[in-house]
Length: 81
Image 1 (spheres, rainbow, N blue to C red):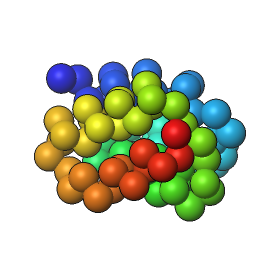
Image 2: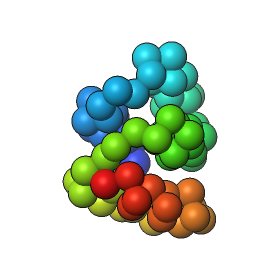
Image 3: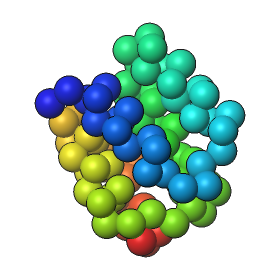
Image 4: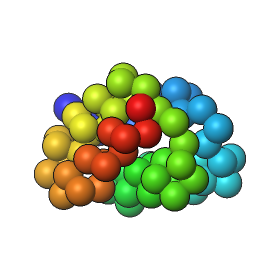
């Protein structure tokens, strides 16, 4: 799986996502810091209490598992659906 591509495809789907955080995430992706970018996405969704849909949650799950990240990063985000 091309994690960078999956994250880039996910970004436009994140509604009400702060522009500053999007800029930071793009910077992390430019430097192949996919894990940091993923952590920021999950943290912002959680901390800003952003609503997501099933497709976003599924994408987060797929990306996180592909990177062997701790699922505690995104598992609680299911409540944001």
